[in-house]
Image 1 (cartoon, rainbow, N blue to C red):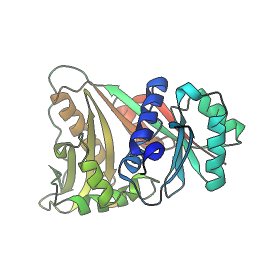
Image 2 (spheres, one colour; image 1 turned 60 degrees about the horizontal axis):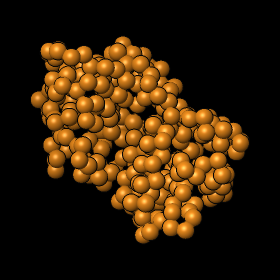
Image 3 (cartoon, rainbow, N blue to C red; image 1 turned 30 degrees about the vertical axis):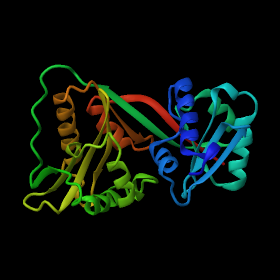
Length: 283
């Protein structure tokens, strides 16, 4: 990004202040990476007083956006001013409200926006004690961990087919993957690749876990369409949970579309319950 008010540091400081006040981050990971590294096609709008950044909005190339206002400068109409600016620039924008907090709901109502999408965060505690043994792979499948410098293109191709209908996950590129590999949390031993037995390059599914201190997020679980029904999703989930317990992690989270009843049912069987809600608003 630029310098001064539009620098990455200024935007991330604003986001940190909002996170501390609200208990939920205003920008998702992709927006943070776009702010930190710069990204083609992203639109940025902001409000400032003097040298202080008071509000910022990020809109990705597909028209999905987020905005936030500094906690010390709320109730001054800044959220509506910034929202109107974004809507004038991208009339079809769909804006995330992480946590769907009351202030976001009121702002959306005042602007005539309606809920168009829900994203659930689900969570479960990990029982202390001896971990359960790792499960056996389904018939005809084997599993290995990701190898950097070898598996990037194959994983991106698998991910694209597994999430072909997903607005964000399915369009990850090799460059996006490299950005995440450079993050301090990335651990290739927590990215499993299921493949046809004896054919390590014939990928069927993947499970990616993101460690966060004593917690861990099931970051992405994808199964290729031709491999559906073979039990790979449940197997990889059990494998990941066993490894989390082995490492002494205490809690695990994941995100799932609110209308994906089959996935929600699967995760509930694995002990997960909804812990928070992100909502997208649009005209």
